[in-house]
Amino acid sequence: MYRIHFCVMPFSIAGINTNEKRDGGKTVKLIKALNNNVALVKDKNGQEAVVMGKGVGFGIKIGGSISESLIEKHFVLNGDSGKRDFDSLLRRIAVDDIELASDIIREGEDMLGYRCNDSILLTLSDHLGMLLERMKEGIYFGTPLEWDIRLIYPREYQFAKKVVADLRERTGYKIPEQEAAFIVLHFINANSNQKGMEETMMYTKIIQNILNISKLHYGREFKEDNFDVSRFVTHVRYFVKRQMNGEKLEIDESIAEVIARRCPEDHKCARKITRFLQQTYGWEVSEGEELYLTLHLNRMNIQ
Image 1 (cartoon, one colour):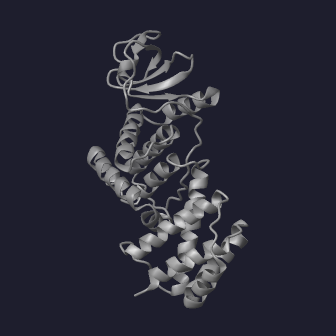
Image 2: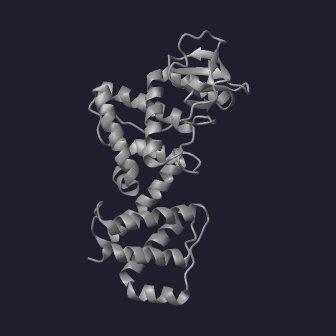
Image 3: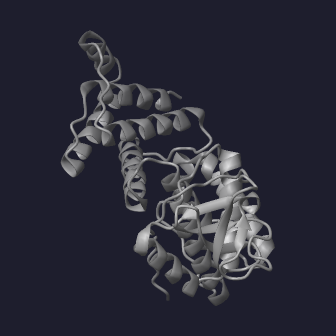
């Protein structure tokens, strides 16, 4: 039996990420062609960068010029740590995996309307490289957050399922659908203001705990395709985001009393959730937030 721990290495990378080709009158200097379509260059600011585009590395000698009109994606390596991270990545995975990650990122940005930060290129490349190695060895694993990820991020999960299907066709490996959950986390992390994958995982785990408390309170599972369940999950996502950002919702006291009196069982569940968050994370949950939770719980449980 294999014991696998999923982790994402924190790469130091910052730069420009654009699908538009650049001004053909400007050039960058080639440091190393990684293949015909991926190259390590020095840009006009003297910074080392990874560039991608059809033919950017073809037939050009070290020190030669590459027209910026060929460059479709441009990622600046952030200092010595960024260079070390990239060199380390190249020792572990094939350059083709970096191109594959770039294609997935471009498709994800188009389908989801995202503008991903640059870190996703290296973290997703690294994940894909490890995934394909695991498939060669017949090692499969899932994540305990899979059900919650499907429920919390339905659009992202549908896109990630398509990525998995495309990878199966492209590689011939029987990649399990559970891998979609990991791809979702990469995109959520790259499209947020959160500090990294660790915070994205914590954010998702908090939402999972809220859903679990609700399921235990009512003694039943929630249906993923139920509109009121989806609406509750969406509310919880924004509620958690507000709490993490130190924002609060307030509500009129007279309205609060009416809601608590009319929905006693739902209010009891909301109180369980707020007590858990206070005890576990030290959060101060406002009465307004607690009562909005009550309303959404009530809607979800009207049969």
